[in-house]
Image 1 (cartoon, rainbow, N blue to C red):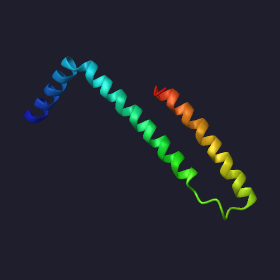
Image 2 (spheres, one colour):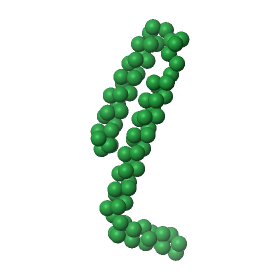
Image 3 (cartoon, one colour):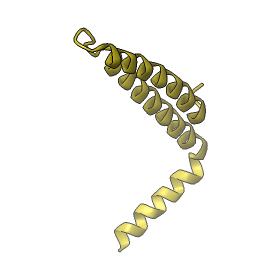
Image 4 (cartoon, rainbow, N blue to C red):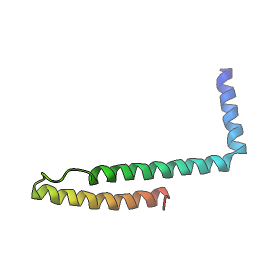
Length: 82
């Protein structure tokens, strides 16, 4: 019980003295996570082997690339990356 109280007290001290720094680091971490996730997803789709796809599958593949680009822009705007 005492250990939990001490941990809570230390967290309150850090929040009081380093509030702006913690907020900035959190925002930077969120921005990095959003950027990493969208790049990884885009990279995986773009590097897919399309040589053996049928015409219909190629149309779907092109549509998925367009959708990913649109979603990437929306996610970055909503997350505040841009």
